[in-house]
Image (cartoon, rainbow, N blue to C red; front, side, top):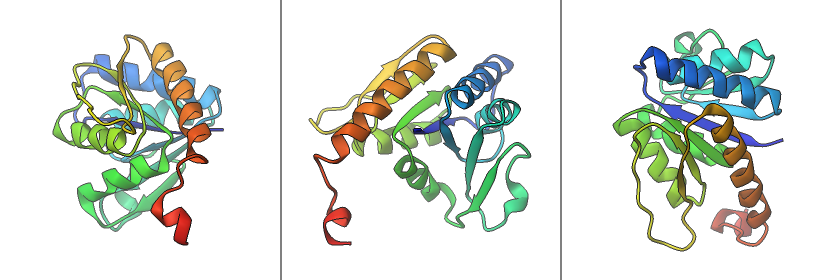
Length: 172
């Protein structure tokens, strides 16, 4: 199926935790592989939703140990690269769902749009894009809308991939 990243703050209100949890359940029901930062907050809430529906959730951890990932992850990948892991989360995905968050979430959303992935946002995230091959930031109000839009955008991204091979695809 599709690789969908879920990004958001490491501190989260009960409201946004419930939103992330519902997003996780819906993504798992639709067969997505979910990628996240693997720690607390939105990452843990979405992981719990995925886990309860027996889905797959991959945590790209900032440190060098699997001990620090949340207990709901299916796969824990210790990157040892801190915030630079945000780029790996985006590269692994075909669409992104952003739930609330702050500067770290904004950096991931910026990477995503620059890399041609669309971001479906629930919350106050704002991001303007100006280049043709950039992705788009969509604002939605519910977990169901976020998951539906993410799947639409992941399909568009996958379909367009064959038309725009990256530098690395050409030479390696």
